[in-house]
Length: 416
Image 1 (cartoon, one colour):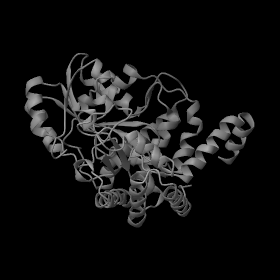
Image 2 (cartoon, one colour):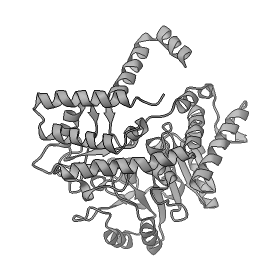
Image 3 (cartoon, helix red, strand yellow):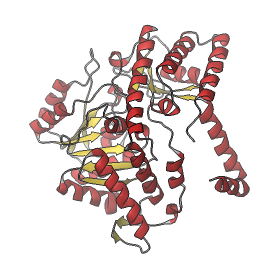
Image 4 (cartoon, helix red, strand yellow):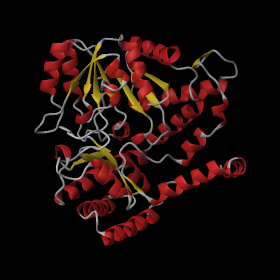
């Protein structure tokens, strides 16, 4: 890898310099973006391997190009590891990322114009679960369920009522900003009531499921999709899983030749590595610590007087709601970034501001847990966040916070 960096510096010093600057940035900040993490050197080595040179349309032993014996070997290995890790009979590992994988599920199970259901974006849902500006809201008749206005938990009574009225072809269970445990059986009951497919998008919580700190939808959902980054700590890719042989055939055909050409074989190799890492006892301990860290962060912020959506967290993330009269999410994100704490603005239930502005921010613990943060560090981080957001114009507080961030990031360096 050193030789590769040396070559990059020789061939394109501008790109090499930009990469170096990003390395320094990542090292020096506290990353609380719930969808980000740090891959191991082993994953990065596989991602930068010679597999990036190979074209491999098709599936193992069924390729449209020659010279794929080792591609077949690594893709089969990734499939087998995914099946074993999640306890399923089928795994497609070729999805380029979460959104293309979700598109493949639509392509396999629904026709354009069919009715689909998903959690609304302000309630914590994902764009590809039927939000209007996304393909899923444009090419399908989308019905959006929400969280309860008082509890801010998924409103299953409302969901069932909507499902009975609209008879969706499939219902999405999963989110990008929901801090509580998913009740897979309740979703199954709603789907069975109206004859819909249940699709579990576990992109955010896959690592927690593997670690045993979040219930698994296996055996309940018809199809499961997950990205391989976030809590799984792998490359940007996706898995589509099922135990249904007929659905498996449809999914394979939807991915290729339906929507994609050749898979990114270097990514497949890196996925195989991250799945191997996720099968260890160390990873299970990591997943448990992710949740404990999020709960500590939430507890301290609540004690500091911040309002958290649904009152706290059961997983790896939480959302601060500043309300209509408080800071905007955009302002809070910017204030924290100036002191080296990275979060993202996020819509909240009942959102009244525009998506680029928002009334909240989302915080997550996967990346800082990978660095080695535990309860003590999360208490410090929460206190820093509270101090800075309550005193955004106080330069002395900002200076002290920058110093604390520097101390923590030096004490807990990025994984090699």
